[in-house]
Amino acid sequence: MNLLPQHARYDFIALPERSDFSWPGGRRLAFTVTTNIEWFAFGAGLGHDPAKTGEPQTQRDYCWRDYGNRIGVWRLFDLLDELKLFAGHCTNSLIYEYAPQITDAIRRRGDEVIAHGRTNAENLRGLWQPDEERILREVTETIARYEGQPPRGWFGAGAYETERTPDLLKELGYRYLMDWPMDDQPVWLRTRAGPILSVPYPIEIDDAQAIIHRRSGHRAFADMIVDQFDEMMKQSEDRALVMNVSVHPYDFGQPFRLRRLREGLKHCLNQKAVWYCRPGDIAEHCYSLGERVT
Image (tube, rainbow, N blue to C red):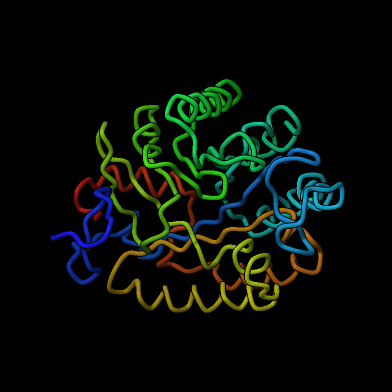
């Protein structure tokens, strides 16, 4: 008897019950960095406020977020270059219209563009299927037009979905999504068009969650990266795992925060058992393994 509303996207399979596998070269921990590159409406729509939750949209909070595109993301690109790390960038498709210099830089770096909706001034909640499908298609076609191929991965604005989103994404040709933060391993999700992969996204090691919503400090966040990495290195001796670190340019693009982010990421480098990769690389490896991944 089902006593609670449930979903049928994936089964409950406890970690000890799973088949083991490894990342390329026999490595045990996949390490990836994702940024969130977002464009917002001026004086309208959704968006974080740096001072007080729930404040109306003003020029102040618009400019705080725009700092991330004008200044912060370029500091993050420099940091990634310094550390020789590739990354995945969850990118609003309107970035191509308003700040194409950013997507040009992503392309030059050989990084991955991950579809992230049109703008974080909106999300998918409450949409009827035709409206949602139109938005998803618009985002997909915009990225394909500029990049020469459609995106492999999706991360919804605010990680919000409707009950149909995975189905629509699969039907549009997506290989993976990152809206389901329930695991440290990739998990196959059922859709009406066949399986799509859920690649782990960090609900904890995400600066928006930690610093903006929970009011943790940037030093605490850098310590979280170090502690997460050290423990996952130990845990991955028994099971292949994914560590994803997520940052927003308007947050960790601030100079005082960037210094500690550099320290935290440096701690994670140059480990023989670690595969430094992009989220799409994780997905493609899992597709090559098939059912060996949960």
